[in-house]
Structures are given as structure tokens and as C-alpha cells.
Image (cartoon, rainbow, N blue to C red; front, top):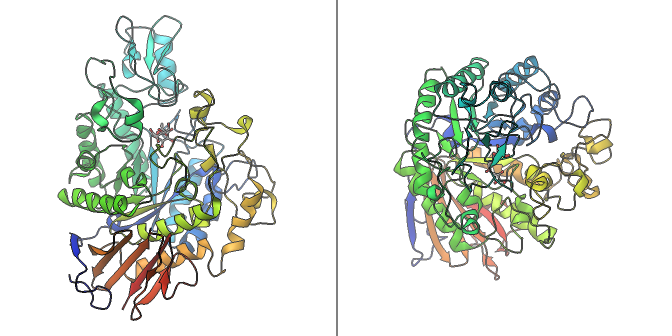
Length: 558
Ligand code: TEU
């Protein structure tokens, strides 16, 4: 791979980072769109999105140009944590529909060539799951309690905190305590117990038999706890900023988790088709994360270190380099992600006051960022991401440029991260507000009754799909162009070289048999002059021809 003369002055250094994959199973290059079902589209007008709503909007996703959808949990659930508190792994919550609706959705998606990934939550169940209810009824020392982490004092409960605030232990009437790394309504399962392993293997089979293409595995790094349940001695602020290795705490990234995923991989591989699983593992640094995507484990793991990169050329280059090298070291595809249902939407996050703050922590006192600048950066960030080799994740509504809804009133908020946090942290409801489809319609077209489980702000109408579709320069049309050009030029599978144009400009060449695409993102204050001989394939801001302004990205070719 060599730099193209008209772009690179002779002194431009080129750093080769990554070679194309020889074989490219779908999951190596897929663009996967996350559907948060409660907030996507509501077919029955009760204010909660549902499976029928997703089905009705598949044509939109097809037109957008995504390869697959990942649907957050739709199982029966008391909704103490947005459905991540599962009461029955093999059914559909009536709020979302029925098993027949799930079958219809899978079939309709497949008919459009869209693959379907569903969410599996193995670290904990709901406290309303029959297993936990049986454990409470059966009492101390029973086999029912042995499926969870029930302990007596002394020593345990230990000092482990719940992710959502407060201690990770709750006492029951007979005096025992149970562990919950998340809400008290999410008791942790004990993965030392063979019954737990069997139950989840059966659940994977249940859904594989129904035709799903894969699974997103919730908190894949938490399942195994270090023996002894000893106290944590870590600086939580540093830990939350990703500055400590994840296994600095005894309930994260323990080696034993890998045995579980090897068994699951063998199970997936026993099915026809290329079934795949992606780890939601907040594991840092990259070489620890790479262990999850070894050849006999997950196919993918979310790249949260990339999500956390600050808006800085050196930081982005470093993440691209390290991500690709570590993924390549185990033959796995890199993944890229900027937003999901747990973090501040990137149109807001990229202009927040403290960019090193954990992306899920929104403090009540945090100043409101500049929406215009946020959207400009978000569009540029997405243009960079969608050119990178590997697989990328989009979160519903980011293709509309949606901002975080910081101003939600306290009484509307439902997230345990807010409810348990004493009001210091606002929680994650602000990225889960139902998305706008039609400006002049009830609930902006989310349904036709106007009901909405979280209130939509008035300016959401301006982001509505009907205001953007077909309008030059809209964020939706930018995403459609990026995805179309990505497909034409097969950018998911190319070699990558970093090009040294200017310290405050990220530039890279992606090369494959469709040619070389040069991606340039300007993070400096001076415009970057686009060479006269280059053709602009797509730009994150309208009207870019000669000069690439600050906070803009462009895809160029000969
Ligand atoms: O999230 C894992 C997780 O630890 C964080 O993203 C968490 O939401 C954040 O630290 C806020 O405190 C997964 C799911 O994606 C999330 O929605 C669930 O709440 C969590 O697991 C528990 O199942």
C-alpha cells in the first residue's frame, strides 16, 4: 500500500496498521443498528414501543442501509432496569407483543436481508424470576439459593458497590444477604452452579432455533467472581474513567468467564449459518478485551475505549491503531461504536465540559452543551467511524442527529442509576426518549395516540424522519450516503494506513480492490486544503469542496 501522489506530499509519513481479512463472514464488516424497543416505534398506541412497531419500520432500516439490527431485551420484565431485569428468558413481555410477533419480526427482517441479534442477560435475573422467588421461599442452604449469591456474615457482605449506587448487597427477611452488582431487583446468578449454565445454554438454543443470527451478551465480563469475595480496594473515580485495568476489581474480567464463552461458541457453531455473538464487556485495556474475541470465543466485542476517546487527533489515532493491532493479534474484526442506550448521545457527549468523564455519568450540575457544535462533531465522528475496517454499531436516533434529553423532569425519570443515585447522577433516560418519525403527528409519529413513556421535547419534531428524508444536507441523508458509499467501496474490509498530514488532522487510507479511499477529519482550528485532484465522495458538512473546515470529515478518492 502506498500513498497516492496527489494527496501525500513526498514527506507525508504513512503508517501501515492493518491488512484486509481473507475471508469476511458477515459479522466482520456489518453495520449493526441498535433498536431500544420501548422507544423505537409503538404499534398499539400505549406509549411503549413494541415488536410490531419494529416490524412496521423495517423498510426504513433497509432504506438506511444497515446489515443487521440488535434488539435490546423484550422479555417479560418488571422493567426495573429497562428490561435488563429478565423474569423469563424464553418469552416476550406483553408490552412488546408475543412470541409469534418475534417470529414474524425475524422472518420479515430476513426477507429484507437484515440479520437479527438479540440481547441475552446472563449475569443476573429479575428478583421476580421464578428462580429467585423459589430461592426466597426455600430458605438458607437450599439448592434454590445456590443459584444466586446468598451469604451470611461475617466478612461478607463485602464493600462491593452496586453500579447504580449504594451497596451491592441486600438483606432478606431471614437475615441472609444476596449480591446484586446492579439494582436490588437484579440478583446476580452464581455461574459456579451447573444449573445456571444449563439454563442459559437452553435459552441460547431456544432463540437459535427460532432463527436469530446472534446475541449481544450483557456485561459479559461480570459473570465470574473471584473466590473469597474479598473487598475491593480501587480508586472508583479512576476506575470509572477507564484508567485502571478492569480486573483490578474481583467481580470483573476474571479468567473463568472465558470457559463459558468457549462453550457458547461451540453451541453457535453447531448451527447452520454464521451465528455470532458480541460481548458487552467494559474491559480495558485493549489487550484484555482481545481475550474475549479469540478464535473460539466471541466473534466481536464492543470497543468502548474508542467510544471514550476524547475529541483530539492524537487520541483518535491512538485508539484506531491500538484497536486494530489488538483485534488483528487474535484474528478478530475491530468494532466501533459511539452511542448506545447506556451513554450520553454522542451529539451531546462530544462537547461536554469534562470529556474524560465516564460516558454514562451525567451529573445534575453538568452545564448544557452547545447543540449546534455537538451535532457538527457527531456527524464528523460518524463519518470517521463508518470508514474504519470492521463492524460498526449505530444507536437508534443517532442517524437523525438526536441530542441527549438532559432536561427530563425528575418525576419522568425511571433509570435505577438516577433512582439509586440520590439525584447526583441523572441516569440514562435522556438517550432513551422515543424517537421522532413525523413532525406534525401525535408523539412525532412514535404512535398515533400521542402517548409516550418518556416525554419528548418540542425540538424533537425538527429532527423527525419526515423532515430529513430527501433533504440534502440532513443528518439522515448523510448517514444514508455514508452507508451507501461504505457498501460500494467495501470499506468494512480494507487495509488501513494512517497518513501524517498535519498533527491536528486524522487522515487514513482504506484500500481494497475497489481502490483507495482517503478519510480526513479536521480537529484543528485552521481549515485543511483539499487537493484539487481529489474527488469528494461524501462530507460531514454540506458544501465542502476546497477547504475542510474544523470539526468536519471528508471521504476522498482520485
Ligand atoms: O450495562 C452495563 C454497564 O455496566 C453500564 O453500561 C451501565 O449501564 C452503566 O455503568 C451505568 O451505571 C448493561 C446494559 O447495557 C445496561 O442497560 C444494564 O443496566 C446493565 O448492563 C445491567 O444489566
